[in-house]
Image 1 (tube, each protein chain N blue to C red):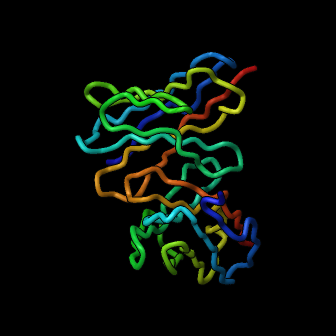
Image 2: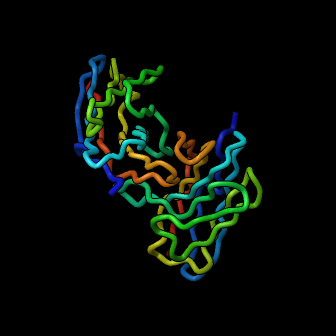
Image 3: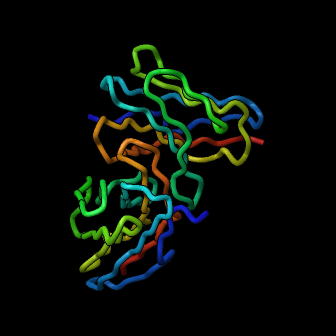
Length: 112
Length: 110
């Protein structure tokens, strides 16, 4: 019973490098989300996908792009990483928008 | 404004009930109240949600005030594994995003 799987779990990048964070869910959920969590803070929404084929900006989308590859997979890309993007990134999914969200274990990303 | 207000921290003795308050005074009639918790180094975990009536599940109970401007998450018997940050979130109808805020850090004392 995997739920939401995120890869990788840890990553260190240099400023200017690019990277894609992967997320997959096996619950046949329509909606998927990417959040970031900075130390001592709550989660902030970066992008979400209400259904396959659609994506929308959240609270903090600058510096990121997303792709809803299919119903199962939702990736987050950093085109040119900056130290301000050092954070823990969480992916989540829900059946529809106002239903409970299920979260992955996070990707801890450090940018030097 | 879709945000809620919670105390920064609370303490409870092990095996005693815990009441975690949340204020959402600007809530609209069709907004749901969700509670999540986050254990150290883990992603948030769904706890419970409700609209108007009180709700119970295996993890907790949710008591929603009659005017819906506040709610209380009730852990009936706190254990050490309940030590976490608890987030009260208001979800607007048709919205897809959760505003987490900084939550309430619950410390359970053995």
